[in-house]
Image 1 (cartoon, rainbow, N blue to C red):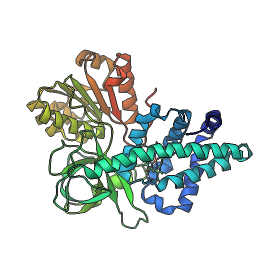
Image 2 (cartoon, rainbow, N blue to C red):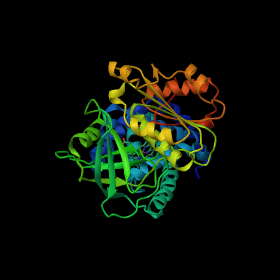
Image 3 (cartoon, rainbow, N blue to C red):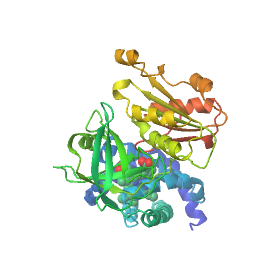
Image 4 (cartoon, helix red, strand yellow):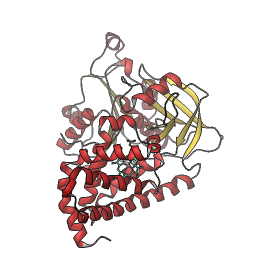
Length: 404
Ligand code: HEM
Protein backbone atom coordinates (compact mmCIF):
# COMPACT_ATOMS: atom_id res chain seq x y z
CA UNK A 1 0.00 0.00 0.00
CA UNK A 2 1.16 3.52 -0.64
CA UNK A 3 1.74 5.85 2.31
CA UNK A 4 -0.36 8.98 2.80
CA UNK A 5 2.44 11.33 1.70
CA UNK A 6 2.87 9.47 -1.61
CA UNK A 7 -0.88 9.52 -2.19
CA UNK A 8 -0.94 13.27 -1.59
CA UNK A 9 1.93 13.87 -4.01
CA UNK A 10 0.23 11.76 -6.67
CA UNK A 11 -3.11 13.49 -6.29
CA UNK A 12 -1.56 16.97 -6.33
CA UNK A 13 0.50 16.27 -9.46
CA UNK A 14 -2.25 14.64 -11.54
CA UNK A 15 -3.54 18.04 -12.83
CA UNK A 16 -0.01 19.03 -13.91
CA UNK A 17 0.48 15.76 -15.75
CA UNK A 18 -2.96 16.05 -17.32
CA UNK A 19 -1.95 19.38 -18.85
CA UNK A 20 1.13 17.75 -20.36
CA UNK A 21 -0.59 14.41 -20.87
CA UNK A 22 -0.22 13.97 -24.58
CA UNK A 23 3.27 15.44 -24.66
CA UNK A 24 4.40 12.98 -21.99
CA UNK A 25 2.88 9.96 -23.66
CA UNK A 26 4.25 11.00 -27.06
CA UNK A 27 7.78 11.13 -25.59
CA UNK A 28 7.02 7.90 -23.75
CA UNK A 29 6.12 5.96 -26.89
CA UNK A 30 9.01 7.39 -28.91
CA UNK A 31 11.62 6.45 -26.28
CA UNK A 32 10.05 3.08 -25.53
CA UNK A 33 9.98 2.03 -29.19
CA UNK A 34 13.56 3.22 -29.67
CA UNK A 35 14.70 1.02 -26.78
CA UNK A 36 12.26 -1.85 -27.38
CA UNK A 37 11.47 -2.02 -31.09
CA UNK A 38 10.12 -5.55 -30.57
CA UNK A 39 7.04 -3.95 -28.95
CA UNK A 40 6.09 -2.65 -32.40
CA UNK A 41 4.93 -6.22 -33.01
CA UNK A 42 2.03 -5.70 -30.62
CA UNK A 43 1.19 -1.98 -30.76
CA UNK A 44 -1.04 -0.62 -33.49
CA UNK A 45 1.22 1.75 -35.46
CA UNK A 46 -1.66 3.65 -37.03
CA UNK A 47 -3.18 4.40 -33.60
CA UNK A 48 0.19 5.85 -32.61
CA UNK A 49 0.23 8.06 -35.67
CA UNK A 50 -3.26 9.36 -34.96
CA UNK A 51 -2.48 9.99 -31.31
CA UNK A 52 -5.51 7.96 -30.23
CA UNK A 53 -3.59 5.48 -28.15
CA UNK A 54 -1.68 8.36 -26.54
CA UNK A 55 -4.95 9.83 -25.36
CA UNK A 56 -6.33 6.47 -24.18
CA UNK A 57 -3.26 5.52 -22.18
CA UNK A 58 -2.68 8.99 -20.72
CA UNK A 59 -6.31 9.27 -19.73
CA UNK A 60 -6.24 5.94 -17.95
CA UNK A 61 -3.03 6.46 -16.04
CA UNK A 62 -4.34 9.77 -14.67
CA UNK A 63 -7.77 8.36 -13.95
CA UNK A 64 -6.12 5.52 -12.08
CA UNK A 65 -3.88 7.95 -10.22
CA UNK A 66 -6.86 10.00 -9.08
CA UNK A 67 -8.29 6.84 -7.56
CA UNK A 68 -4.98 5.51 -6.34
CA UNK A 69 -6.33 4.90 -2.83
CA UNK A 70 -9.51 3.29 -4.17
CA UNK A 71 -8.68 1.45 -7.39
CA UNK A 72 -11.84 -0.66 -7.07
CA UNK A 73 -13.72 2.43 -8.26
CA UNK A 74 -12.18 2.08 -11.72
CA UNK A 75 -12.31 -1.69 -11.90
CA UNK A 76 -14.77 -1.71 -14.85
CA UNK A 77 -12.28 0.33 -16.86
CA UNK A 78 -9.38 -1.89 -15.78
CA UNK A 79 -11.42 -4.92 -16.79
CA UNK A 80 -12.17 -3.59 -20.24
CA UNK A 81 -8.52 -2.74 -20.93
CA UNK A 82 -7.36 -6.04 -19.42
CA UNK A 83 -9.58 -7.90 -21.90
CA UNK A 84 -7.81 -6.09 -24.72
CA UNK A 85 -4.38 -6.66 -23.17
CA UNK A 86 -5.12 -10.38 -22.73
CA UNK A 87 -6.29 -10.66 -26.30
CA UNK A 88 -3.06 -8.98 -27.46
CA UNK A 89 -0.78 -11.14 -25.32
CA UNK A 90 0.47 -8.42 -22.91
CA UNK A 91 2.50 -10.08 -20.13
CA UNK A 92 3.66 -9.08 -16.63
CA UNK A 93 7.23 -8.56 -17.89
CA UNK A 94 5.98 -5.81 -20.23
CA UNK A 95 4.79 -3.62 -17.34
CA UNK A 96 8.21 -2.54 -15.99
CA UNK A 97 9.19 -1.49 -19.53
CA UNK A 98 6.13 0.76 -19.79
CA UNK A 99 6.69 2.08 -16.24
CA UNK A 100 10.34 2.92 -16.83
CA UNK A 101 9.63 4.85 -20.03
CA UNK A 102 6.67 6.66 -18.54
CA UNK A 103 8.93 7.99 -15.78
CA UNK A 104 11.63 8.95 -18.28
CA UNK A 105 9.00 10.89 -20.23
CA UNK A 106 7.60 12.64 -17.13
CA UNK A 107 11.13 13.77 -16.24
CA UNK A 108 11.90 14.95 -19.73
CA UNK A 109 8.70 16.97 -20.15
CA UNK A 110 8.47 18.45 -16.63
CA UNK A 111 12.22 19.13 -16.29
CA UNK A 112 13.21 20.55 -12.88
CA UNK A 113 9.60 20.50 -11.70
CA UNK A 114 9.86 16.70 -11.56
CA UNK A 115 11.71 16.40 -8.24
CA UNK A 116 13.05 13.06 -6.99
CA UNK A 117 10.19 12.98 -4.52
CA UNK A 118 7.61 13.30 -7.31
CA UNK A 119 9.32 10.73 -9.54
CA UNK A 120 9.58 8.24 -6.67
CA UNK A 121 5.93 8.73 -5.80
CA UNK A 122 4.90 8.07 -9.42
CA UNK A 123 7.15 5.01 -9.59
CA UNK A 124 5.31 3.62 -6.55
CA UNK A 125 1.90 4.56 -7.90
CA UNK A 126 2.61 3.01 -11.29
CA UNK A 127 3.64 -0.18 -9.48
CA UNK A 128 0.27 -0.32 -7.70
CA UNK A 129 -1.67 0.36 -10.92
CA UNK A 130 0.39 -2.19 -12.88
CA UNK A 131 -0.18 -4.82 -10.19
CA UNK A 132 -3.92 -4.28 -10.47
CA UNK A 133 -3.78 -4.88 -14.25
CA UNK A 134 -1.41 -7.84 -13.93
CA UNK A 135 -3.62 -9.65 -11.44
CA UNK A 136 -6.85 -9.08 -13.41
CA UNK A 137 -5.06 -10.22 -16.58
CA UNK A 138 -3.62 -13.33 -14.90
CA UNK A 139 -7.16 -14.47 -14.13
CA UNK A 140 -8.21 -13.80 -17.70
CA UNK A 141 -5.26 -15.78 -19.11
CA UNK A 142 -6.20 -18.71 -16.88
CA UNK A 143 -9.86 -18.54 -17.86
CA UNK A 144 -9.06 -18.30 -21.61
CA UNK A 145 -6.67 -21.25 -21.53
CA UNK A 146 -8.66 -23.49 -19.19
CA UNK A 147 -12.13 -23.16 -20.70
CA UNK A 148 -13.39 -25.95 -22.97
CA UNK A 149 -11.83 -25.45 -26.41
CA UNK A 150 -9.75 -22.57 -25.03
CA UNK A 151 -6.09 -21.81 -25.59
CA UNK A 152 -3.18 -19.63 -24.61
CA UNK A 153 -1.77 -16.92 -26.89
CA UNK A 154 -2.33 -17.28 -30.63
CA UNK A 155 -3.67 -20.41 -32.37
CA UNK A 156 -3.59 -21.07 -36.12
CA UNK A 157 -6.96 -20.92 -37.90
CA UNK A 158 -7.62 -21.61 -41.57
CA UNK A 159 -9.86 -19.36 -43.64
CA UNK A 160 -12.71 -21.65 -44.70
CA UNK A 161 -15.04 -19.37 -46.63
CA UNK A 162 -14.50 -15.78 -47.64
CA UNK A 163 -17.89 -14.21 -48.39
CA UNK A 164 -18.54 -10.73 -49.77
CA UNK A 165 -21.38 -9.26 -47.68
CA UNK A 166 -21.50 -5.81 -49.33
CA UNK A 167 -19.28 -3.58 -51.46
CA UNK A 168 -17.17 -2.87 -48.37
CA UNK A 169 -17.68 -5.75 -45.90
CA UNK A 170 -16.39 -9.31 -46.33
CA UNK A 171 -16.81 -12.22 -43.90
CA UNK A 172 -14.10 -14.73 -43.08
CA UNK A 173 -15.09 -18.11 -41.63
CA UNK A 174 -12.23 -19.37 -39.48
CA UNK A 175 -11.66 -22.98 -38.41
CA UNK A 176 -8.84 -24.20 -36.17
CA UNK A 177 -6.03 -25.91 -38.07
CA UNK A 178 -5.87 -28.62 -35.36
CA UNK A 179 -9.54 -29.48 -36.04
CA UNK A 180 -10.27 -29.48 -32.30
CA UNK A 181 -13.01 -27.70 -30.38
CA UNK A 182 -13.07 -23.91 -30.17
CA UNK A 183 -13.93 -21.86 -27.10
CA UNK A 184 -17.46 -20.58 -26.65
CA UNK A 185 -17.84 -16.82 -26.49
CA UNK A 186 -20.37 -14.25 -25.47
CA UNK A 187 -22.21 -12.46 -28.29
CA UNK A 188 -20.48 -9.09 -28.69
CA UNK A 189 -16.96 -10.34 -27.93
CA UNK A 190 -14.00 -10.05 -30.31
CA UNK A 191 -10.88 -11.94 -31.29
CA UNK A 192 -7.43 -10.62 -32.18
CA UNK A 193 -5.94 -11.50 -35.55
CA UNK A 194 -2.14 -11.42 -35.87
CA UNK A 195 -0.83 -10.90 -39.38
CA UNK A 196 2.52 -10.88 -41.06
CA UNK A 197 2.32 -8.64 -44.08
CA UNK A 198 4.92 -9.18 -46.79
CA UNK A 199 7.60 -6.54 -46.78
CA UNK A 200 6.71 -5.28 -43.26
CA UNK A 201 9.21 -5.48 -40.40
CA UNK A 202 6.67 -6.07 -37.65
CA UNK A 203 3.54 -8.11 -37.15
CA UNK A 204 0.15 -6.40 -36.93
CA UNK A 205 -2.58 -7.29 -34.45
CA UNK A 206 -6.16 -6.12 -34.79
CA UNK A 207 -9.40 -6.91 -33.01
CA UNK A 208 -12.53 -7.96 -34.89
CA UNK A 209 -15.94 -8.65 -33.36
CA UNK A 210 -17.29 -12.14 -33.88
CA UNK A 211 -20.29 -11.72 -36.14
CA UNK A 212 -22.12 -15.02 -35.72
CA UNK A 213 -23.63 -16.75 -32.68
CA UNK A 214 -21.42 -18.95 -30.48
CA UNK A 215 -21.66 -22.73 -30.54
CA UNK A 216 -20.55 -23.23 -34.15
CA UNK A 217 -17.47 -25.09 -35.41
CA UNK A 218 -16.07 -21.81 -36.75
CA UNK A 219 -15.61 -18.18 -35.79
CA UNK A 220 -16.83 -15.59 -38.24
CA UNK A 221 -15.48 -12.06 -38.53
CA UNK A 222 -16.90 -9.51 -40.96
CA UNK A 223 -14.31 -6.95 -41.92
CA UNK A 224 -14.74 -3.51 -43.47
CA UNK A 225 -12.41 -2.34 -46.19
CA UNK A 226 -11.14 1.09 -45.17
CA UNK A 227 -10.63 4.06 -47.46
CA UNK A 228 -7.05 4.86 -46.45
CA UNK A 229 -4.12 2.57 -45.69
CA UNK A 230 -3.02 4.73 -42.79
CA UNK A 231 -6.24 4.63 -40.79
CA UNK A 232 -5.86 2.40 -37.72
CA UNK A 233 -7.77 -0.42 -39.35
CA UNK A 234 -6.88 0.27 -42.94
CA UNK A 235 -3.68 -1.65 -43.33
CA UNK A 236 -4.82 -4.94 -41.84
CA UNK A 237 -8.44 -4.82 -43.02
CA UNK A 238 -7.45 -3.99 -46.58
CA UNK A 239 -4.84 -6.74 -46.54
CA UNK A 240 -7.48 -9.22 -45.38
CA UNK A 241 -9.75 -8.13 -48.24
CA UNK A 242 -7.13 -8.09 -50.96
CA UNK A 243 -4.62 -10.78 -50.02
CA UNK A 244 -6.05 -13.32 -47.59
CA UNK A 245 -7.82 -16.05 -49.52
CA UNK A 246 -9.61 -19.27 -48.58
CA UNK A 247 -7.12 -21.85 -47.33
CA UNK A 248 -4.79 -19.29 -45.77
CA UNK A 249 -3.81 -19.54 -42.09
CA UNK A 250 -4.32 -16.69 -39.59
CA UNK A 251 -3.15 -16.51 -35.98
CA UNK A 252 -6.08 -15.91 -33.62
CA UNK A 253 -6.28 -15.29 -29.87
CA UNK A 254 -9.19 -16.59 -27.77
CA UNK A 255 -12.39 -14.47 -27.61
CA UNK A 256 -12.32 -11.48 -25.26
CA UNK A 257 -14.21 -8.35 -24.34
CA UNK A 258 -16.69 -7.06 -21.79
CA UNK A 259 -19.30 -5.81 -24.27
CA UNK A 260 -21.77 -8.65 -24.63
CA UNK A 261 -25.46 -9.39 -24.53
CA UNK A 262 -26.94 -10.43 -21.21
CA UNK A 263 -28.72 -13.64 -22.19
CA UNK A 264 -30.16 -14.10 -18.69
CA UNK A 265 -32.43 -11.08 -18.93
CA UNK A 266 -35.87 -11.58 -20.45
CA UNK A 267 -36.82 -7.92 -20.89
CA UNK A 268 -36.80 -6.40 -24.44
CA UNK A 269 -33.57 -5.52 -26.11
CA UNK A 270 -32.78 -2.91 -28.75
CA UNK A 271 -29.70 -3.52 -30.92
CA UNK A 272 -28.60 -0.39 -32.79
CA UNK A 273 -25.76 -0.30 -35.30
CA UNK A 274 -24.19 2.06 -37.78
CA UNK A 275 -22.13 0.66 -40.69
CA UNK A 276 -19.69 -2.09 -39.73
CA UNK A 277 -20.81 -1.64 -36.11
CA UNK A 278 -23.44 -4.23 -37.01
CA UNK A 279 -21.01 -7.13 -36.56
CA UNK A 280 -21.40 -7.61 -32.77
CA UNK A 281 -25.11 -6.84 -33.13
CA UNK A 282 -25.64 -9.65 -35.62
CA UNK A 283 -23.87 -12.01 -33.22
CA UNK A 284 -26.28 -10.87 -30.49
CA UNK A 285 -29.28 -11.17 -32.81
CA UNK A 286 -28.36 -14.71 -33.93
CA UNK A 287 -27.76 -15.72 -30.32
CA UNK A 288 -31.15 -14.45 -29.15
CA UNK A 289 -32.81 -16.26 -32.04
CA UNK A 290 -31.03 -19.48 -30.96
CA UNK A 291 -31.43 -19.18 -27.19
CA UNK A 292 -34.32 -16.84 -26.43
CA UNK A 293 -36.66 -16.81 -29.45
CA UNK A 294 -39.43 -15.39 -27.25
CA UNK A 295 -37.44 -12.30 -26.33
CA UNK A 296 -38.60 -9.07 -27.90
CA UNK A 297 -35.84 -7.63 -30.07
CA UNK A 298 -35.66 -4.47 -32.14
CA UNK A 299 -32.75 -4.61 -34.57
CA UNK A 300 -32.03 -1.15 -35.97
CA UNK A 301 -29.36 -0.77 -38.60
CA UNK A 302 -28.22 2.45 -40.22
CA UNK A 303 -26.20 2.43 -43.43
CA UNK A 304 -25.60 4.89 -46.23
CA UNK A 305 -27.45 2.76 -48.78
CA UNK A 306 -27.99 -0.78 -50.03
CA UNK A 307 -24.54 -1.04 -51.63
CA UNK A 308 -22.77 -0.94 -48.28
CA UNK A 309 -25.47 -2.72 -46.26
CA UNK A 310 -23.96 -6.03 -45.12
CA UNK A 311 -25.61 -9.24 -43.86
CA UNK A 312 -28.99 -7.98 -44.99
CA UNK A 313 -30.49 -11.34 -45.99
CA UNK A 314 -29.16 -13.06 -42.88
CA UNK A 315 -30.74 -10.44 -40.59
CA UNK A 316 -34.03 -10.61 -42.49
CA UNK A 317 -34.24 -14.40 -42.24
CA UNK A 318 -33.29 -14.42 -38.54
CA UNK A 319 -35.86 -11.69 -37.89
CA UNK A 320 -38.52 -13.82 -39.58
CA UNK A 321 -37.73 -16.77 -37.28
CA UNK A 322 -37.80 -14.95 -33.94
CA UNK A 323 -39.66 -12.10 -32.29
CA UNK A 324 -37.52 -9.50 -34.02
CA UNK A 325 -38.55 -6.18 -35.44
CA UNK A 326 -35.85 -5.26 -37.95
CA UNK A 327 -35.68 -1.63 -39.11
CA UNK A 328 -33.29 -0.34 -41.77
CA UNK A 329 -32.29 3.34 -42.05
CA UNK A 330 -30.51 4.65 -45.18
CA UNK A 331 -29.33 8.24 -45.18
CA UNK A 332 -28.32 8.23 -48.88
CA UNK A 333 -30.56 5.65 -50.58
CA UNK A 334 -29.95 4.96 -54.26
CA UNK A 335 -32.66 4.80 -56.94
CA UNK A 336 -32.36 1.02 -56.82
CA UNK A 337 -32.96 1.04 -53.06
CA UNK A 338 -36.13 3.05 -53.63
CA UNK A 339 -37.33 0.75 -56.39
CA UNK A 340 -36.71 -2.35 -54.26
CA UNK A 341 -38.03 -0.73 -51.05
CA UNK A 342 -34.92 -2.12 -49.39
CA UNK A 343 -35.05 0.26 -46.44
CA UNK A 344 -37.67 1.37 -43.94
CA UNK A 345 -36.71 4.92 -43.02
CA UNK A 346 -34.77 7.58 -44.93
CA UNK A 347 -32.41 9.65 -42.80
CA UNK A 348 -30.80 9.16 -39.40
CA UNK A 349 -32.03 7.44 -36.25
CA UNK A 350 -33.51 10.18 -34.06
CA UNK A 351 -34.64 10.55 -30.48
CA UNK A 352 -38.19 11.11 -31.70
CA UNK A 353 -38.15 7.94 -33.77
CA UNK A 354 -36.83 5.89 -30.84
CA UNK A 355 -39.44 7.35 -28.52
CA UNK A 356 -42.25 6.36 -30.90
CA UNK A 357 -40.97 2.94 -31.86
CA UNK A 358 -39.20 1.17 -29.00
CA UNK A 359 -39.96 0.33 -25.41
CA UNK A 360 -37.86 3.03 -23.77
CA UNK A 361 -38.86 2.18 -20.21
CA UNK A 362 -37.96 -1.50 -20.21
CA UNK A 363 -35.40 -2.21 -22.90
CA UNK A 364 -31.68 -2.69 -22.68
CA UNK A 365 -29.89 -0.80 -25.48
CA UNK A 366 -26.74 -2.08 -27.16
CA UNK A 367 -25.07 0.04 -29.81
CA UNK A 368 -21.95 0.21 -31.92
CA UNK A 369 -20.90 2.32 -34.90
CA UNK A 370 -18.84 5.38 -35.85
CA UNK A 371 -18.10 7.72 -32.91
CA UNK A 372 -20.44 10.59 -34.05
CA UNK A 373 -23.25 8.01 -34.50
CA UNK A 374 -22.62 6.63 -31.02
CA UNK A 375 -22.58 10.11 -29.50
CA UNK A 376 -25.96 10.86 -31.09
CA UNK A 377 -27.52 7.59 -29.92
CA UNK A 378 -26.08 7.95 -26.42
CA UNK A 379 -27.37 11.53 -26.11
CA UNK A 380 -30.82 10.51 -27.42
CA UNK A 381 -31.12 7.63 -24.95
CA UNK A 382 -30.01 9.82 -22.04
CA UNK A 383 -32.53 12.50 -23.04
CA UNK A 384 -35.23 9.85 -23.12
CA UNK A 385 -34.35 8.91 -19.56
CA UNK A 386 -32.75 5.52 -20.21
CA UNK A 387 -30.70 4.68 -17.14
CA UNK A 388 -26.96 3.96 -17.44
CA UNK A 389 -27.38 0.33 -16.43
CA UNK A 390 -29.46 -0.23 -19.57
CA UNK A 391 -27.00 1.50 -21.95
CA UNK A 392 -24.24 -0.74 -23.38
CA UNK A 393 -21.84 0.23 -26.14
CA UNK A 394 -18.50 -0.54 -27.67
CA UNK A 395 -15.95 1.49 -29.56
CA UNK A 396 -14.03 -0.02 -32.41
CA UNK A 397 -10.52 1.31 -31.72
CA UNK A 398 -9.17 3.00 -28.61
CA UNK A 399 -11.74 4.12 -26.07
CA UNK A 400 -13.05 7.63 -26.48
CA UNK A 401 -15.61 9.76 -24.64
CA UNK A 402 -19.27 9.81 -25.62
CA UNK A 403 -19.92 13.19 -24.05
CA UNK A 404 -21.20 15.73 -26.56
C1 HEM B 1 -4.39 -0.71 -25.10
C2 HEM B 1 -3.87 1.43 -20.77
C3 HEM B 1 0.08 -1.25 -19.93
C4 HEM B 1 0.07 -2.52 -24.61
C5 HEM B 1 -4.60 0.07 -23.98
C6 HEM B 1 -5.71 0.98 -23.82
C7 HEM B 1 -5.55 1.59 -22.62
C8 HEM B 1 -4.34 1.08 -22.01
C9 HEM B 1 -6.47 2.63 -22.02
C10 HEM B 1 -6.82 1.21 -24.84
C11 HEM B 1 -7.88 0.17 -24.61
C12 HEM B 1 -8.89 0.08 -25.70
O1 HEM B 1 -8.56 0.33 -26.86
O2 HEM B 1 -10.04 -0.26 -25.40
C13 HEM B 1 -2.76 0.87 -20.16
C14 HEM B 1 -2.33 1.16 -18.80
C15 HEM B 1 -1.21 0.41 -18.56
C16 HEM B 1 -0.95 -0.35 -19.76
C17 HEM B 1 -3.01 2.15 -17.87
C18 HEM B 1 -0.34 0.34 -17.33
C19 HEM B 1 -0.76 0.36 -16.12
C20 HEM B 1 0.43 -1.82 -21.14
C21 HEM B 1 1.63 -2.61 -21.35
C22 HEM B 1 1.64 -2.95 -22.68
C23 HEM B 1 0.44 -2.38 -23.28
C24 HEM B 1 2.63 -3.00 -20.27
C25 HEM B 1 2.71 -3.72 -23.44
C26 HEM B 1 3.95 -3.35 -23.50
C27 HEM B 1 -1.13 -2.12 -25.13
C28 HEM B 1 -1.52 -2.35 -26.52
C29 HEM B 1 -2.81 -1.83 -26.66
C30 HEM B 1 -3.17 -1.31 -25.35
C31 HEM B 1 -0.66 -3.01 -27.60
C32 HEM B 1 -3.70 -1.84 -27.91
C33 HEM B 1 -3.76 -0.51 -28.58
C34 HEM B 1 -2.71 -0.28 -29.63
O3 HEM B 1 -2.21 -1.22 -30.24
O4 HEM B 1 -2.38 0.89 -29.86
N1 HEM B 1 -3.79 0.14 -22.85
N2 HEM B 1 -1.91 -0.05 -20.70
N3 HEM B 1 -0.26 -1.71 -22.32
N4 HEM B 1 -2.14 -1.51 -24.47
FE1 HEM B 1 -2.07 -0.87 -22.57
